[in-house]
Image 1 (cartoon, chains in turn purple, yellow):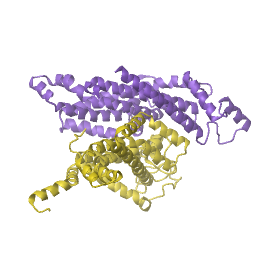
Image 2 (cartoon, chains in turn green, yellow):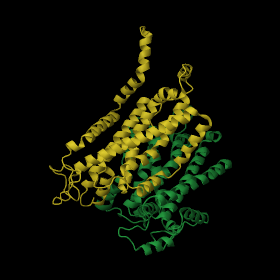
Image 3 (cartoon, chains in turn green, purple):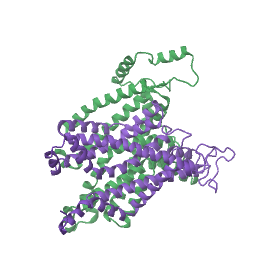
Image 4 (cartoon, chains in turn red, orange):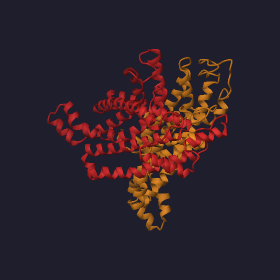
Length: 305
Length: 294
């Protein structure tokens, strides 16, 4: 087990390096720079700004400087928010995104698992069709449609929830549902499939024959096998939650990392883009690893594979 | 040869994969609805310039944002452009992105997966390791960066989306080829002296068609979603051209005063995604009855 973790972690290092390097050269070689304006700046000023951010050094030198900074944990200064470093900006906004993602995941698991299990218990009845139709709707209504519509109904017309902000608990309801809905739908479908497969096994029939109550049967015997596909899905899902957060944070005006990333991409804020890319990539690599480990923990048969 | 009752039975068996699949598909009302809707939509998209009641970029400033009426079925946007026309043109773009980018991913995925599965051994494990690693990359982020820095043109959009979506296709095709190449008909082909390339293109790839069709149908909605997502963020199709993501973005901005600007494009996008997903599900059930519906 330890060996696998170590191997995966070691493997991530060259992957991360490749991501950083590709991104670094991609954004620098592309036309346009962070200090290009509609109206041209005084060349002297432009030069001084670029010198300040080390932008007129040879490309390779910029690269080695940046990588040197990275190794000591320094993401460099932000080009657009002159007073803050990328480290500070990330430290401010990342916890917000993390919180949003966590709530969304809770929404997704809670609704998705419940719906999936209910559907699997009575296949091809209305208890199956209703949640599965809802799940299909959840998959087909993207978050950038769901967000504005929820805002329109519950924020503006009914006035139950605030339309923007991220301070009190009520602020967090609509964004979490918007972000979590699609994953709730996928989880419902996956857990239904997984449960149906497990419930058709012989050991379930044996347990039933021995007079086990339906609740115990589900919770103690079927659930463990039934949720395996859901856990395998969690790794990619969290990666999806990240890109979902770009939209949700923009729609609900949440000061998180997703919004910051989209803004910095538009502004060509090189260091900010690189910082967020590194953070996202690390996060995705780690989450995939955790989801794989969970999978082998829940299904010991995978350990030897 | 085909004379006895036994051989007619065999002929029926031989053709029955597609016939059977079609019969099963016909029973699935939702999938059938999806297929009809998509055919209808594709037809409309092809002749949009002929049937669109207005120009997609012709503003009518006196009118401004007006609700649905007899002249403008879905109303008009803030500068008086006909929303129905803009949805038609947006659908054209969405479908085009959906089909072309899926075709790119199909081509890359099938070739890559087939090569890996066919060569096997070390080459295979290296090639699939690369796919595994790419799975773990924050691709949406790369697409965003690409679109910002290399200009927002539609060709790049096709390539960027296609480059993201081929991974799963490669995996599916590889696993199919791996099991197919052990079959006797491949041995027969080898003993007939066919080259490896011929075996791969004429015998192995055509036999993976079922799962490939199913997954293709399920890739198209993903691709359309990605295009709409990018356009929503302002990174995809650029105004005055129209796209569903763009229309939804504009609609969300003005939903207080003119909710129809949000509602109609949202319905158009969701209905299309519905149809594609139902059709994909239906095709999966029809072509591969062993797989239980998840």
